[in-house]
Length: 358
Image 1 (cartoon, rainbow, N blue to C red):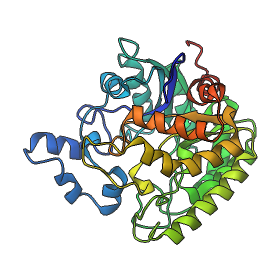
Image 2 (cartoon, rainbow, N blue to C red):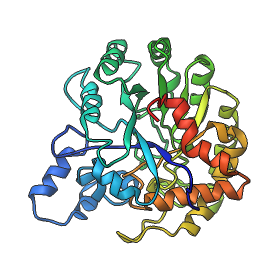
Image 3 (cartoon, rainbow, N blue to C red):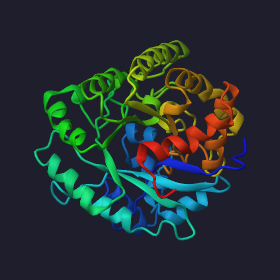
Image 4 (cartoon, one colour):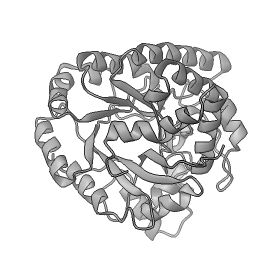
């Protein structure tokens, strides 16, 4: 599908430079820069859960900056992007503000798409949460809210930040979250699908706060086996899909929640990882993701879905043009007209992230 006559907002990308900024994966990236061994050796050194999550470690070993994104976007007419925090570590409790400041300094809009918004990192359970929000806002007028690392999965071989469920509904998290709500900021919720009821509880507790569900809830293993037991056979994958479908329906009943049509090409969903440089063909992607997109369109409607490429995390599976075309084709196949496609690929992001510059 072509995007003739419209431009696109990519509402979910990551930027990093592991050589000059403190990322979780910076140490390994520096090792492979200065030690002359193939980067594929990173797969052998990393735990299984990390190998399955990244698929191919190459994108994590190199800087990913505006020019890199612009090259990857290809023929997709991206006018603006939204940066989502990614594993900035260190520098004390206000350290995540350095990422917001760094992103705001990058040369977006110089023969590249514009930087439309920044979603920074902050954790409501920390005592400095309110102070951190204010510091983010002072660092850039493009700051719109936060994402907190809360992902949990019961399979120990599926990569996750939290070792136990329930953080989103803990007393400390719910009480701290009020500082975000008081400032009219948005919350990016990246969870695995088993946590969708937690997101629903959060949306019910704070009905006036915009909650953006990342990656349609990331049902790990829905396309193939990952981890120790997840998605091991078609029956388990069907059970996973049905539970995801029901929980997404319950979440969509809350009008303050919007869902990102992003991350559907993440290796952790169970996609087979193709050879480097040979992205999965669009028809194959459309066949895999259509059931998820059709249900998301049914329960959220085209006015509460937002497209994002999740690059470069999805790069081992697909390209940005292939990902965008697969999503648009699947939506159109379920009855989305040109107006609805434009809502998903541009208008909804403009509204949710306050992209006044477009």
